[in-house]
Length: 508
Image (cartoon, rainbow, N blue to C red):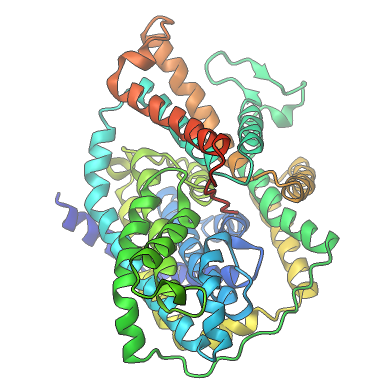
């Protein structure tokens, strides 16, 4: 079958009425999540995993997994767009990749051009989403065919690269990021060892034999952690909101932003494909590129529309690009894609090269739904900009109880154990304490997802080589992955030692 035929089959899945509804719900909730400062795509996706599990409980496994991932992906790219609303209206980024948008977006709003800034952000997000999806369609099958040639040694090195990439660029301190990665790997060892059948770190507690549930850890660290932060730091967030007048951009606005949108989309897509780089890095690079090639660089930071169009396009294209390593190689390139991967594994669906052969309904259904979701986002966000702007004013006293209720009911509905509720609460406190002291939380989730897979591939490789560790360096591809992984950790260290500023990814 050709790629076009696979894509048509994907649209047949995505256009089923319940999947259309899930895509619609996903982008609406995602936009709301992005608009609410502090929640962000990771918390939003983690919070909704148990909800989707409950909604799809009566379906066959593959259909349930397809519907769930369609909704969760909608939340992901919806949140990437929604973060621009608070950046432009409040100068408060809804999530970290919208920090750069605030530089010019808020200045435009101060000049009475908030509507134009928001609509250009919506158009840029749409164009970027379509470009990223075209790249995903073209690269998905060739990359998954290449990955089928990988053995356990190559997979071990590739997963190690994914781990080093996110750890090397997460948070303000690499030492803290690496500590969190190791902590996540340690949590991943709890439970019955798959090879020897020996219980590890279970302390004779039957509830720990199956290991710690990824869902409980993710919801606790992100969603409840944010709740504790808001309550304990009394963050009421009642800043004045800029007024929205004309929503549609002028012809000159469209002309001025056409090239920045195209450049930002392409740059963002290629940066998104790199594990660990993420949307924050993409938006920063695209902004700097526009400023460098601009005939009037001094206008940046003072309300230049290119300063909104380029980073907004880049961060949305990066979220599409991040799907490529996740779906084709089984390597999550960011914290949010790690949570999406964990959601797929909950349905016994392993992302990677076999996904397109074993579960084409899920892989191509997701890709097709993202095309539909991007159209829905554009149609929703242009006329409903003022409605989403009102969401910003939701009082925290109403919002926080809803988040707590969804967290507890959701985790209990999936796990049915009170132990997981205590673990959820403990992770919420831990998430707050870690973020308060600038310890990045994303590497914990990534290590928890990748840790068992790294261990299994390492053991398989050593079994093949009769315990000879040189198998990891005698395979050329494995050696290349290990060298890149080492460089991802060493290069930022060298830059820091030489006194240069290190760009970090703080996707939370």
